[in-house]
Image 1 (cartoon, rainbow, N blue to C red):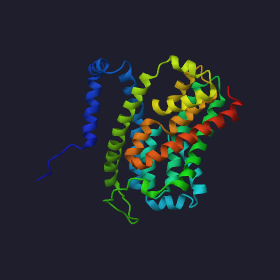
Image 2 (image 1 turned 180 degrees about the vertical axis):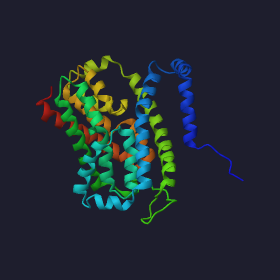
Image 3 (image 1 turned 45 degrees about the horizontal axis):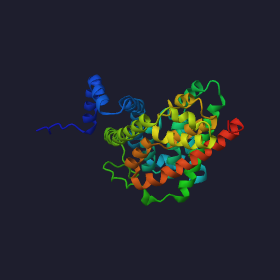
Image 4 (image 1 turned 90 degrees about the horizontal axis):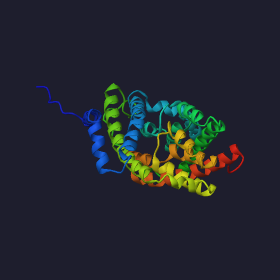
Length: 327
């Protein structure tokens, strides 16, 4: 007798998503009545922007788990963290996605034997220096073409510095223990096509849940920040740097679209805009939620502050180098 079919978490999520699409008008009207104006628009925009790249990320993660043996990374990656971290950071340019997709991939790389510091450098660099992000930045800052190179340098330097710092201060017990593997190969790791779909399903369900939580928090902050506030902030360079760093964390924009938002802040000095573009792909409230779910809360509460401080300092330093002052 064939076992009775029971829908999994991925099927349930797909059904909910399909229902939301079909009833989007009614849901929008309902949310508008019970939530602040614009909240539903921002929440849906963040989820819609992030979901395709999250799917890309979990598919790549599943492919790594199913078809790439751990011995491959042992052969390719240098044993020294001094070399492994910058190499992993440079490899981030090959992933055409945003920060949501890089989290499950970094988790899978660690699972396959890559040093956590190198995997985290990849996590930070991929959403900041990939070609799609750089092209979007070039379009948004046509009057300031140096912003593209400044963002590339700031994103890569941030990733490498945080990776090296984590190599020194990181502790294995700060990261969530990995579940035991059920299908193993010669190297003791999961292998084979039978692993692909379960891995994709598990990674997507976990990451999507925390994406929704992060998007809700970002939408709340986005609707509460008054527009007049930014005009006052622009009058002080130091205040603009702090505020733009904080906004990048709380607004949780997708790295493919954040350049257009940064360019729209006409009263903010260019150094403040670069800080916004450096902090956002590296650490935001959405990423914090996803990293807490993937790596554990003990990891996130340590990793996020380190990343934020490094990203702000690197953004300021790179801005001064490329733009020759605080303008």
